[in-house]
Image 1 (cartoon, rainbow, N blue to C red):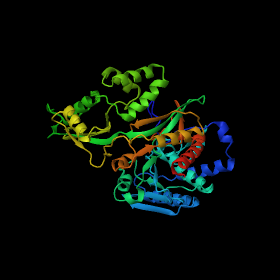
Image 2 (image 1 turned 45 degrees about the horizontal axis):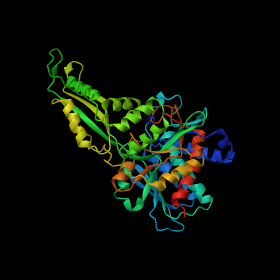
Image 3 (image 1 turned 30 degrees about the vertical axis):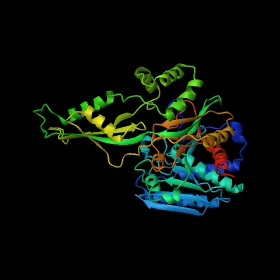
Image 4 (image 1 turned 120 degrees about the vertical axis):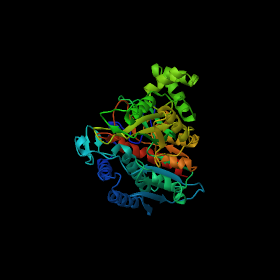
Length: 463
């Protein structure tokens, strides 16, 4: 999920041992216990009872923060939570929305060394499916609100929380929130805990923290080749599987044109100043001429998905019997589309590459909205810089565009600017395993995110 220069992800890592020691052991134990409970609820697609367990738990935790305005929406075989902390001293400003998602990617237990929904600690990490994406940030938001309430923080504007239950699948929680539930979540802007965060070198030097202002459009396309088939002893010159294979090969070899926008340009400009090596030189060349195909291709090889639309085959099926010519062959091609490029334009390009024997159709319901970057705001950037500065003074804060899709696209499309914000950070070169085996988050990073969330909210929601 994370590129060489993108500090985007929910689920990033690590505080120092010294900072850890400054936190009372009982507080650490309580935070860990809550996180363990949340991770061990297997909120995967098609398990509505598990979502009810989690929303019941979270409702009780919000009540501990004095927040009783909790609405749980049942929809699409899952649930979405909308929570509001009313302003104590209203300033007249619109609310701020905090976002995360409750659902996690399914995990095949036989592939894991330990049961995926068994929370455990090993080598300084907390492990379990969803620990990184996105339950660490979700838990961090809850804890931050509890602690702010305990210290008598009085928000000057409403703080709204949106926890969805299908971000990893159909995205209807965010889609409905941005439309039919708009009055419940309408805000000046949103801080999305599923995007944003930082990166730190093993020796403690901070590489930077990212604030996501744009994301690619997600879309699946179905490639279908059909044929009247026949007996395998008399092969035909036209074959559905061969036609599909040729189409997929053409798509594999195709390079979409390089592109740049405000989000990628801003992050590259900052990185170019701080990287004196080969990567920095490529970035500077790309900034000087984004249409230089050779430079763009080299940069794309080092940081896949950063310079253009990318499409890749992800699923394949074909044929109906081992001794019969195939009557049908199908493949799914997943595309992450650069902002400003239309989904239909990509479909047409895939169709041209596939040829007349293969039909390319957009998979209904798979797409996220086509959105432009959220406008950069100095007040949000400065607040983020100050919040991170409580742990990493003078840490660079970079706007960026993420290659992955989040719920934020639905809100951007509805006119609510979204900024990926994360108090978590990662160790350069270390694997966190989001969506993969032995998913994990650095324990000190999990605890360390909470003060950053708290300081951010003091600055953007305080008097």
